[in-house]
Image (cartoon, rainbow, N blue to C red; front, side, top):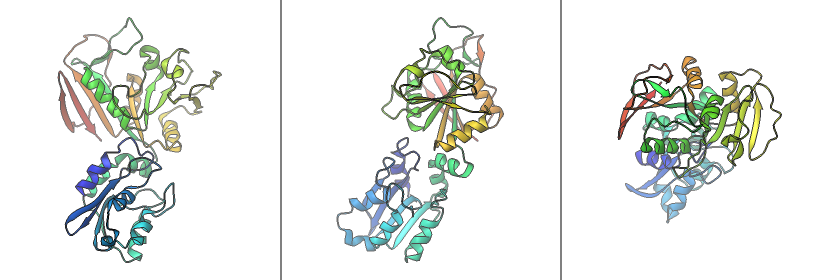
Length: 337
């Protein structure tokens, strides 16, 4: 099962809105096939594992391990439960049940009704943590929310004034690359309009090979400058506003008007768009809204050794530290709710 989880994690950022799934087939205490779901719309982990088995006749005497309950419904691919039954696999070991109402125990029931022995809850806690975005989305009807910011040793996230409208980097180059890796792992990224006005950010994964997340900009009064990068490049961007914009739409850009401009409306929008995760990069006002509403699941905070003395204070945040990592002269603290 640990191997299943390791395989599943390879596709982080590539399977949305599907979960991360790995599968391993064992015959006479030897792995004879393994695979993982690599991209949404492509074959599932069980299919890839079965396809790797050269002699399909031994499948009737093999055990299939999978970290998430096999699907039982037709989506972009046929049900994996049917495939398992068709090849005569008699034993299936599962880490966790699928929270998606379309599956939710139906895959396990189908297997059992076909005479398959099913063993559940093997490394369940680890499996549900790996798919925490998928579980949060289906159980809480909102994306898994990760907050991120960088602060100085004396608690500032930006200087009072800047000479340019480019981001002021507090952390180091290694931290910047890590942030771009994180962006590639999430379905969407969010900033407030003030960040766009002050920093003109790109919000892509240019320093890491991976997918660019869907960019969401909170801009209630349509204050984004016309020449802002998020409006001029080709990356898909959604501007969430309160007053309908009269600007012409181009280059994969769209405007979405929320009558009630609040985080509840934002969560509803994300759920309807099948966004399993939301990477909140700021600025201070946006982050504070999430913190005050206790609407977050994970926080990643860089603290540099440098000091600003004055400037924009970092968000008022207090939670138990779960993990500490040193990145040269910067410390990364990770928090889980």
